[in-house]
Length: 217
Image (tube, rainbow, N blue to C red; front, side, top):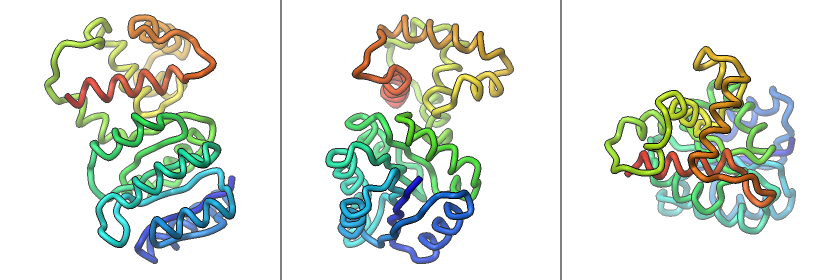
């Protein structure tokens, strides 16, 4: 897997490059700002771009702006957005417009190599990955009645895991249920949320987005 990295801090870029190389990824370039990142993506067409949200010149949302351009112009390149702070609004902006091959993790997660490489693998396969801290925060917010009210408590637990990007096997291990039971719950969730099978959409991504939209209200 070919990767590029964008972060304004040299030590972060070098640290990420070391971790990814140790995991067997080919880091073909690193940038300190959004413009340089876009040049790297245009030149190398990597499988994944790892992008910090806040970069020069304003240190606000330059990473998000660059990530949106990448997903729009290079649909084969997945984007993993990193942030030092919990910023659900930024995650939702990106995931709503480009749900597939887009992920959002807190920077502290990249210290766990298995978590980072698993997220990159899922993104390259077309999944979405959302930091579990964001999911947990959203779960405990009050919200108005909505589509999720049709789900049982167990189905909501399963959907929360789907929103984190867990596989059926991972959900089973988290909730101490069999993979077959997970499959049944996921099918029920899709049915209750009206997510029919389609070659043009990924139901797990759509279910995760619906969950995140409703729980953040």
